[in-house]
Length: 190
Image 1 (tube, rainbow, N blue to C red):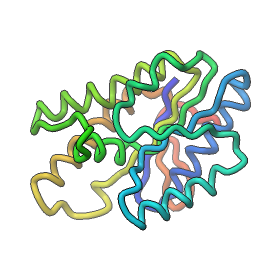
Image 2 (cartoon, helix red, strand yellow; image 1 turned 90 degrees about the vertical axis):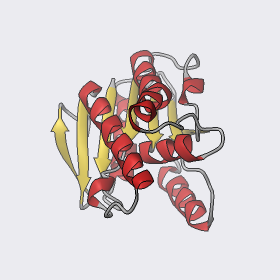
Image 3 (cartoon, rainbow, N blue to C red; image 1 turned 90 degrees about the horizontal axis):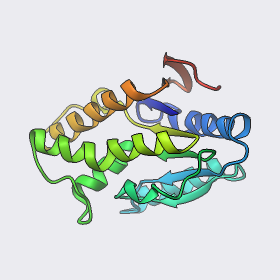
Image 4 (cartoon, rainbow, N blue to C red; image 1 turned 180 degrees about the vertical axis):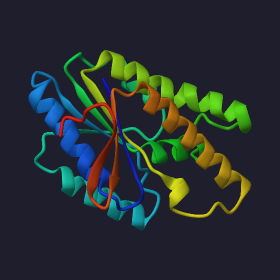
């Protein structure tokens, strides 16, 4: 089962996604583990503050944190059909795969999209087919800032296309707006 949560910066999507993952674990997959897949690389003080805030938000909720900045495929093979994974978040994962030395998305145009499908979309889809549930957080960055250059436009288009692919495969999708979740597809567990 794949769930997709989107929203703009500061929209409440992370808190909502955590509540969805916790509810799925508690109500549908109580025999499995609850994983928080952290994709934000601590590259500066602002990132470190955001990471610390997210750690405080999930404290006491039962998450096992797995840092995975690149290479989601390494999560495959260790899951059970009862595990719930929260992937936080797709925009960080894409940035890491595109701009970190160990990343695997280096092309442009359709080549970059094919690499993004291989490095991000396929592992998420495979994990969602093997685990109990996968909740993926993403961003609506087209509504946040104007695009300034070709590389930023490529990044935004890659994220947008990944969002479309994941949204098509998700059993449910929601957008967080002003701290409230608006269901876009299917039924969310909370």
